[in-house]
Length: 397
Image 1: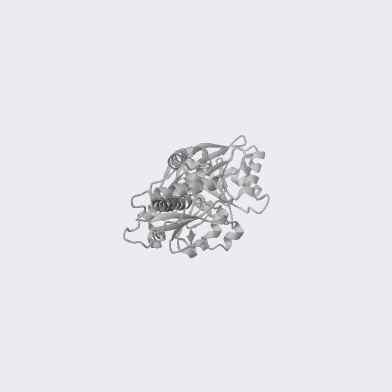
Image 2 (image 1 turned 90 degrees about the vertical axis):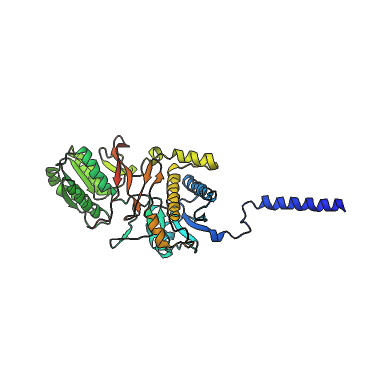
C-alpha cells in the first residue's frame, strides 16, 4: 500500500512539473486582464522580421518586463504591447484599429505615407496615436490641433527656423537673400511664406520670388532679377525637380550663389555640389548616441538591438507614454483620454540618444530637436553645424 501511495504521489509531482514547464508562457489562473493596459503597435512597412522590427519589438518587450518588476507597476497596471501586421498605403485607407476598453494608445513606426492615412482611423478610436517619426504629418485642422496626435519629429517647417538660425551664424544681419516659393502647392507655398516672415523678423532683407514649379524653364524668367537682388543665397521652396533646374542654371553661369534647399535631403541630390540642407534625422545611426541603450537592453535582458535608431525611437515613445500614464490621477482606474492627452502633451525629459526631449503642448511634438546643416560635396553630405532648433507652432499664412 505504501509503495502504491509513493508511486501516485511521485506521478502527481512529475505531472505538475510537466504542466508548469510546459505552460511557462500561459496566462495565470487569476484574471489579470483588468489590470493591464493594451498598446497597439504598428511596425515599419516592411514588417517585424527585419532589423528595425526586431529592435522595436525587443525594446518594447524590455519596457514591458521593467514595468512588471516595478513595485506599483503604473498605478498597479502593467502594459501589454499588441503587435499589429504591417500596412500598405492601400490597406491603411480602410484600416480599423482593433481597440478594446483596455487600449490606451497606438504607437506607429510606419512610413509617413501610411501615417497620414491613419489619422482618420485613429481619430475614430479616441486613443492617442504616437508617431515614431511624423515629420510630414500635419496635426492641425482649421488652425486647431488634433489633440490625439503626437510625434517625436518636428514638423517639416522646422527647416525655416533652422535656416534662420544658420543665417544668424554665417551671414551679416543686413544680408539680402532670395526666397523662392511655388504657388498652389501643398507645402512649399506655406513654407516660403513662413521663411520670409522669420527672416524679416530677424532683420534680414528677404526678397520673395514666386515660380510655377510645373513650368519647365520658369526659373529663367526671374533669373536676372534674382541675381541682381540677392547677396548669394537662394532659399528654395519649389520642390526637388525645380530646385535642380535652378542649380543647373546657376552652375552653368558660374555663379557664386548657393542654394539652401527646403526639401528633405536624399541621395538624388549628391551630385549637386554646394547645395545646403537642414535635417533632423540623417546620421542618427552614427551620431545619435543610442549605443548605451543597446548595451543596457542587452546586459539586463539579453535582447538584441540590430537597429539603433529604431530602438531609440521605440524607447522614447515607450517612456513618453509611461510618463503620461503615470501622471494620471492615482485613484482613477479608468483612463480618461482627455486627461491622457493633457499629460502626454506636458511630458518632459524624454531620453532620445544624446538628446533630451520636452514636449510642447501647443504642438504635441518636442520643443526642440538637434538639426544638422548639411553641405553637398564630393557626392556626399557633410555636417557643417549642429543646431538646437525650436519647432514652430501653428503658423497662420
